Image (cartoon, rainbow, N blue to C red):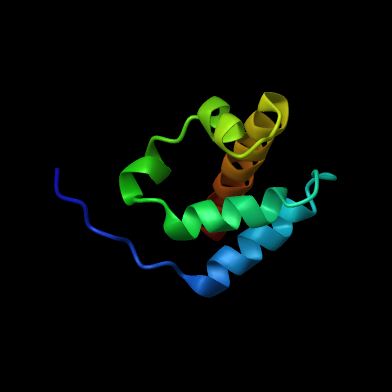
Length: 84
């Protein structure tokens, strides 16, 4: 399967991670692990991420990983709706 890497919009990523970080108190290194994943994972993995598998691979609780991805998606949807 051919993949096409998507260029990261640095400003937008920084803004979204900052806002996500403020959404709730996260365990230490949760945000840095997410940022590293976004920057290093192949596009396919980014679009097909399983919060449960993500948690297991990064020594996180499943609940926190699910909360992280739900908060990320919720914030992204709100941002997209507000700018439309």
